[in-house]
Length: 441
Ligand code: UGA
Image 1 (tube, protein in one colour):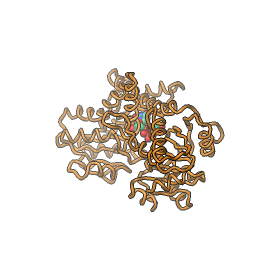
Image 2 (image 1 turned 90 degrees about the vertical axis):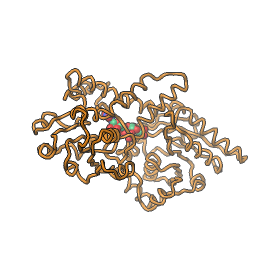
Image 3 (image 1 turned 45 degrees about the vertical axis):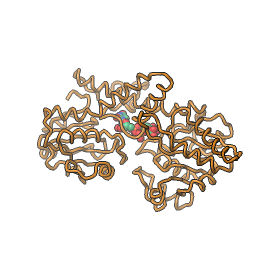
Image 4 (image 1 turned 90 degrees about the horizontal axis):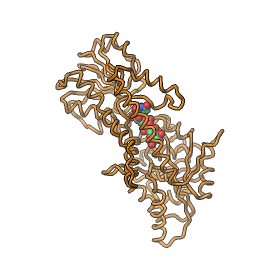
């Protein structure tokens, strides 16, 4: 089938590539000429495991093309996906400017029936707005072209995006048009094998499903961070509590890991946007506000532990920071807990020596060259003249460090474990002081 994707960010690029992999002819459109030129040369703008060979293979096979020309894209697509960004505006609601610009562009040039698919995470009611905007642009040129607008939210996780896209656990389609649903059913048939994964519903329910899913996951995390904070005050170990509650299948083991707070481009933005949507409909989403408040506090947790250990005297100290990306297997630094930690350390007069397998370049882009930040090429290099180690991201390569070496090298022999990766007793046996999240030490 012929597919066009507007936007080559995470969602657009991964979706387009996976659809091409399944034999469709996909054209990806983006306004960023450098990005498009790079993609044409096989340069992938993001770090995402497995994506690069898939892009190259499908590009070489002629099934995946990149262009800055929206008209060529609109002429091509039987289904046209809108996967452009929806950044939060000043009050935290999703800014739909780019989505509606694409809708106008489609309306200006569409000359055949197409299904326009909202793939970006957009507030409830956006499909109506896209339909109205597109319809107005068609009308302005006096064109009578039939089209449908469908909500089809994406549920991929950074770092595992290709896998999530190729093997979705559900495909949510919000539409009341039988024709549009039939077309998408055909497009998704290769992803919908063995058992029915398509969940067809009305548009608004599909739009809310996306926010509800992310808000639920964020709630689980904030809940566990809250329990961790209680645990450390009452002398319990949240890691044991986690095992104790996760074995109840109604709770489950997934997404109940306490840590340095959730980050990334989705949870913080989506929880906030859903809260704003509720408020715009005269409802105060008390729980969502609490989820956000717990997370905001949790992002300062590691710094608080460090500050307390050093009795507030951080001037001239050097902290080795392990992990910069907001989670492993990505170079994404958006809302990363490492940023809160580093900024607080700098504010207090401390220096940072940091290592991350993928996000060093992105960190340099954000903070530039500064005296109080050294981006190291290895874990070992972070230890040079460092007083303590703070683990912020749970990369696999950080899982079994040489604690004896840490004890020998660190000036103050202290390890702050922001992801509860280590066995406190093992760390302490090596002669280091250990601080975790909600573990009473
Ligand atoms: C999230 C959702 O998991 C996806 O299902 C969704 O499609 C995506 O947002 C989106 O809306 O596009 P992502 O932001 O890539 O995906 O990352 P997650 O793996 O969900 O992690 C989010 C944050 O939660 C990270 O900072 C992670 O460290 C933190 N987290 C996760 C915890 O602190 N504890 C946990 O138990 C799990």
